[in-house]
Amino acid sequence: MAPLNNEQIEQKKNERKAQIMRAAIKVFADNGIKLTKISMIAKEAKVSHGLVYHYFNSKDEILSESLEWAIEEKKADQVFHDLKESQNSPLEQIKQFTQFAFTESDTEITSSVFRIMQNLSSSNGLPDHLKDLVEKAGQFYIESLYPLFYEGQKTGEIIQGDTEELLGVYLTILSSIMADDPSFWKEHMEWKVEILLRMISAR
Image (tube, rainbow, N blue to C red):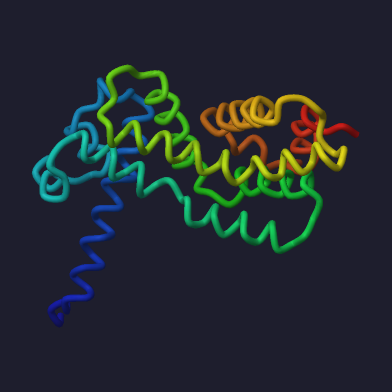
């Protein structure tokens, strides 16, 4: 068997690191930040305790890197770009984004990430880099969705009231669903999303 070249070695390393981060996301979500131990992550990833330390220096580093890896902001950014280009109505764009949230992501990873983010949001004394990560993730969706809610209110598609507060209600409900079991929404999804959006629709 021919030895691996540098590119293949790098690919193997990236795959192994992703394997550890995927396991870490699940373990952090299932056990909470404080109760999670590196040995638990190693067991879930089916690797040695020492191999985890080969890629990460601490539990805190595993948490921050795993979250950054799991939050697919670039993919969501492309979705919002495509929605804007579609020139659909604001409410229709919000509907399409909601469907994207339930269908285009890795359900298990997405659910775990939302559970971790909720845990972090309610935690006191977070390190600055984790606080920034949580705030950045939330701010990205607020900045992307706010113009749709605002324009929808102007056109009469979306109920009147404080736009930021209305968006906050929508995102709170969406994140709660994602933290629970988004797979439920994949069956008869369009009908279920229609029901969900009645809370903001003026029609």
